[in-house]
Length: 315
Image (cartoon, rainbow, N blue to C red; front, side):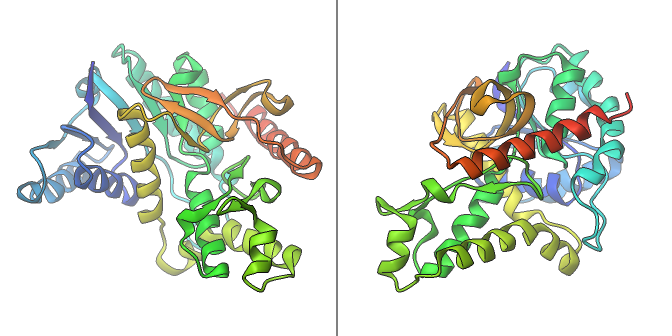
């Protein structure tokens, strides 16, 4: 297995932007692009490859599933896009994209792939569960991009609200990557201070009002972008790059990726996002935050929503 080789399945806006981001960030030596439209994959590979003189040596090309057999990681972005009017939730996409995955996953497993599967297609939590079911792989090897982007959006909006660097904000979005996601306000900190205390230092005292407004902006971010430019791809590409870096460098970074829960937070048999130690082997451990009772209840509601959708899938 070549850990410095990655496959990207799906060469739409998200897949091609991820490939471009990965090339720029010196993570892999070889990138294989696969798409149902082979000409699209060839075109994207050529377009990105022509920038090779500006980065370290890298091989990027359009291939097929046989080229993925020895890859260290496969990133799946293929699927039907969310409707552009902003009126379709990620969960409403499910059956259409499950059907796509029923074609993709068997093609991967029959090649004896030994690496890590990173699911990005929406609804990502459901499709991470679908990938586990169809592949039979160990749960630590199947990861969804989860709420890594949602968490970044939350930090961005808090940073804007307080006029500080968002990298100084420590908080997570947990649960579904979608409408039932939860901001972990009860454990949020800035500069070692509880978030509310820091807000008051900056002259902000209407905490609940600000939290509700910011969480709604985060929840609606994807829809806001979709209605304006018909797709979202830059932010998710940076989020995926961050996950890949954590895996490739064995960082043991704590990221809110989506993976199968085994009793954490009292939840089983569902994939959703919680802070997770990410290593070269994938998921190592989920971190149990001291959430408020309301946040725990909402996390369970989010899990139940996902389970209901998963149980309604036609196989």
